[in-house]
Length: 131
Image (cartoon, rainbow, N blue to C red):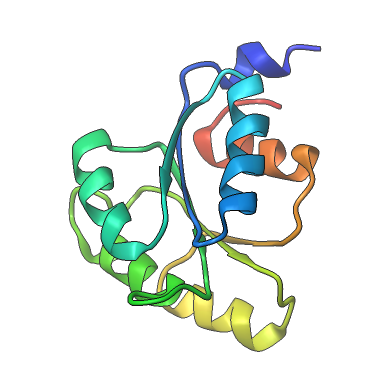
């Protein structure tokens, strides 16, 4: 199994107001050698993104203060981070949510609860690595 080696050193940010989701993602990603950055909401995330320059960003759609769509839009409008892959996280798997995510520039949509395999496959695809 070459999974940990292939994702070693990839910086992944997980933005979600759910401690359970953040913790699950952190465990899955860390076990695979990723550097994990966590944020509770969009405001918290924006400063951390500027300081840490993650390779891949997961952002929950439904968050207080600054929701996932707004956060994604701000990331994508910044010339320094416009090419950073942003994956929307949502417990809803609706066409409208996917379309709205695309409109603000998201690169993919992952439904919660995600599996370790789906999370790592998504990171690998967007970090240009093989899972």
